[in-house]
Each structure stands twice: as structure tokens, then as C-alpha cells.
Length: 275
Image 1: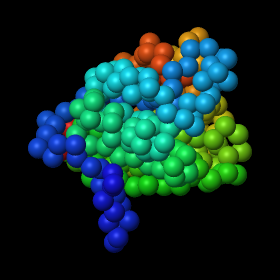
Image 2: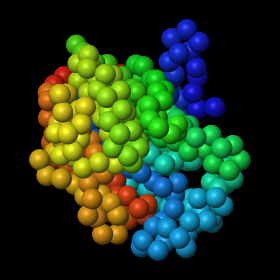
Image 3: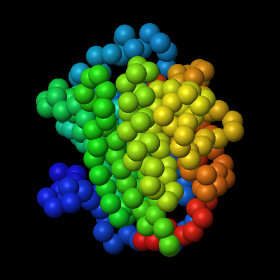
Image 4: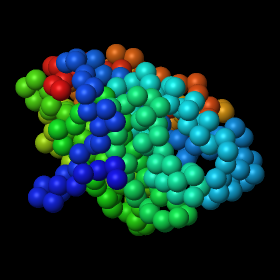
């Protein structure tokens, strides 16, 4: 298992890959969000048809694709993952979040299963982090169809805390707004907040025409196109931060493996992270 449930608080703990690893106090945080499409390489639209069988059956190049992804993730402190498989037939019974954590040398990882189809597929999100979370929670998001979730992690700062949310939102506007309203409620009392993931919406719509418009969240001044990876034209993958978190640098990484490009951001915290 990849979580240790606490029956009293109903909060989960990230599994340490190596409990002896420690991260020094820092105010600089390197973030990346990546929809990995369960390790399928997609380079053209017709691959959704010709390679669609890989969503159901194993493929001998899948782990090689994961290895390439892990090489890129190794440069970051926190990685948010979407469209992961928790260990079913199609992934060779490999928990892809655990696999990437090991390959990219992250000391802590967490797998959220949102659609558990058993042998056929275990769809979900993932969190990889070099900083141990104070609190880790598993949330099911509202919507017309079940199967969307959010990972909530809280990290201690010197005099306050940082709330981080990993999410993969629905495609429809109505369901998205329900989910964004839910996320807005979660961050409303946070000292500092980060929302990252495949939000399936343009940055302007998220910050100007959704329940997040009344939040303290903001995005980069320059939009980062992340989809489709072979000819990026749409901005679907985002890292949104509260106003006291300084954006130092950002960009979509030129790693066209999945149908999404990873989006990265370096931020500076107002006070050091505690470990």
C-alpha cells in the first residue's frame, strides 16, 4: 500500500522511499505538473486511435517512457501527476507513481485512486515530494460523473503553512465549476496556497470566469501552452499560486512523450519551509 490511514483524523501519510533523506530549509521551491497519460507516447492525433489499445493492454515501451519522464522530474521538489495507473494489467501491475518516485529519487510519494477498475485499470493522480507533508488528505471532487479527485498536502513554513492541491478536473464547464467551488472552499483559510494539475480550462477562464475569480490565486503573466504536446496550442495544465508566493520562473518543458507537456514553475516562499 502507498498510504498509512489514520482512523482518527482520516488523514494519510506519504510513504517515504528513504526515511533517512532530509531536505534543508529553503524558500525556493521547484514545481512541476504533468499529465503522463499512463505512460503512452502520443505524437499525432491519429495515435489516439492506433495506440488506444495501450489504455487496456500492456506495452513493452511503457516503462521506457516512464524512465524518460522520471529523468525530467528529477530536477523538481514537488511533482503533481495526473492520469497515472496504480498497478493493473495495462501497466504490468506497476504502480506508476511509486515507479516514478523511485526512478526520480523522491523520498515521498502518494497515489490517489479515483477509478478503481481492478485488473483492467486503476486511474488516479499522484504526488511526488522531497519535503514531507505535515498533513495529506484524499478528496473526491463533485461532478456529474464520479472519478475526479484532489490530493491535499499541507507543508509547514517557519511561521505559517502552505496548502498544495493536486487535481485533474472534468471537461464540462458545469462540473468544472462545481469542482473549482469545492477547491476554493479548501483554500479560503489557507495562509498560502498552490493549485496545480490538468485543470482542462484556459487560464483566463479559471481566474476571471470561475469560482476561483474571488480567490487570492494568480497565474503567470505569459500563458504556457501544453496541449497537444506535439504542437502545443491550448493551455490546460496550470500552477496557480497565492499572491505572497513570488513566481521566479516558469515554462512548458519540451518533453513530448504524453499528449500533454509538463508545466514547471519556480517560486520563492515568504518564509522557509520546515522539515
